[in-house]
Each structure stands twice: as structure tokens, then as C-alpha cells.
Length: 113
Length: 115
Image (tube, rainbow over all chains, first blue to last red; front, side, top):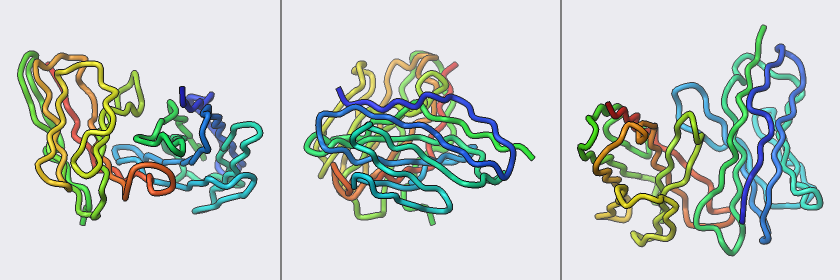
């Protein structure tokens, strides 16, 4: 079935360092991939999305590239800030069978001074 | 102003009771959803609706019943509450189901505690 895997539960980084949060997916259909960010006690909100193979998409300093060959959509940022501390979810909507988004288990990013 | 209104924000219930979670969206979207978030399952899909029609149900228990009286309204009735039902319930909406129209917009959530 369709699924999303996020391997890191918690990532702790010092401010100013680069980060990559892993996301891989499984689907037999053409995929739409999303990253959502959830700050403490807030609702998740869209960070970025893509359905185009090998094209980098960016928003608020974060970027990701959908690679269909490896079924991946990793989230990156070159220099994390304290305000980036949050829970990050990768999500998948398969084309032709998308009645809901499948979410990964989430990665908590903790940025320390 | 919030575009997706969930009521109440916090809810405390006793085991065995029944509660209704309210959700209204003012984004003009055609699809609405319920997701549940707990420590065990970070964002678990429950139901999806499109034009007031149930499209998908991934909830094993019939104790959870969605109710849509209007296109922009999707309530969640939970009966015979159990402590395991304690979670934050998020209502969400999207322009339509599927593909790039499927960007989800979430309400602020209802935090349910069952004692």
C-alpha cells in the first residue's frame, strides 16, 4: 500500500548548522509529496510540496527535491535557526487514488544555541 | 481570523460518555477531513469527505461517526469514550481531493482527555 517513512524521530542540531530530514515513500501511482511543519501547540501547516521529478522546491529557506528514482523527498536547510525547532511531517498523496494524505511518523527538530 | 474553526479547544470527558467535536471551514473548500494526533500515532487519518460524501474511512471503530450537515461543516461524534481516545483531533480541508489540490489546511485542534 501507499506509505511514507521518516527514519529519524529526533534530530538535535546546533544553530547555524545544515539539516537534512529524510523522507521516502512507497506508491504505485504518480506521487504528490508534501512537507508540513508543526510548532509546539499549533496546527500543522504546509511548508512545501512537489510532484515534479528532479526539480528543487523552496520555501522559507527550506528546500526539497523529489527523486522518483529513489522514492525520496528529503527536506534540507543550509543553516537552521532556533525558530526552526518543530515537528516536521512528510506526506504523500498518490495520484489517481488520493482520497487522503498519508503522513510519516514525523521528525522532531530541536535546534540548540 | 482562523479559516477553520474547531470547537471546543479543550474537552474533558468521562469513560463511556459521548461527545461531539465541531468543525467549520470558511476557505470554500470541497473536501474535509478528520485526523487524530497522539503520542502513539503522530498524525493518523480518520475520515475524508468530498461534497458532503464520505470518501474514505480508516477508523476501525464505529464509535467514531462523522456528520456533515453542510458542505463546509464536518462534525465528529464519538460514543462510548475510552481513555485510549485521548488525543488531539484535527479537522482539515483542501480545495479538492487528490493531487496538487490536496494541500491540507488544519484547524487548531480539539484536545480531548478521557478520564
